[in-house]
Image (cartoon, rainbow, N blue to C red; front, side):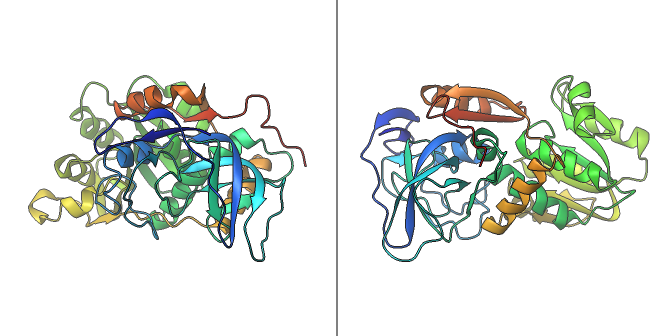
Length: 340
């Protein structure tokens, strides 16, 4: 099968040929039709043995250390079950499914034509009317957005500053928060006012001129600080600390990049204690996300649809920053619509 993998320590992701995985007891093998890009993919590809390191989205419950090569990149997928392992199973051959690779092994990522996953991992049926392409873009970013909003506790009338709002998580979080009556300040790189307004942002702040432009823009409309912060991009503790200073006393400041743990020195902070977000994906939440999309509660902004061989280039571009919406890779062109 074709796959995009890292074949040696510190190697670059590349297109390779690998054997199909055989499902073990309790597993199903999925013939993948779409895989979605997440920043976590290149972070883990840069150091696949890092496992639970403090950087990026390795903050995932149940994610073990990963050792051995080749390491197939990616965690989010959608496709159809083509083989069921031994033992009872809640899935059948032919079922359209989407999910997140919960326990990646060498060779077991989502940027491949096949993946074997345990039936108790974050995997769910794709409901009638939801395309596999859209379903593939939901697991990591959608789960993160829902759980971030819950962790922030932001409600009607609150003001939420989202740094890195134009990416996948930010696009979902903007919609979910605004639907709850939260006033969203979307900090992005470049002029994204129209796009973010459509997603529900009350105001869009262009920070492409430099990080020093954000505090002045926020203080202009919220001199006493915002109620909550979701920083989706800052790795440096100093950058995250500068953003937490924009949160009012009693507010909440959350990071998805491990910057809170690295910024344990209180001398860096003039805002609330940092919250390091930990993703906890589940099949139940995937069902809820799929239902929300099919009901029209929120949309999935897919900005790029690329063949699998373009994945290494897309990962490099995402690493460089400025991501918009979601990028999906097509494994089986023209095969991804599901109507029930």
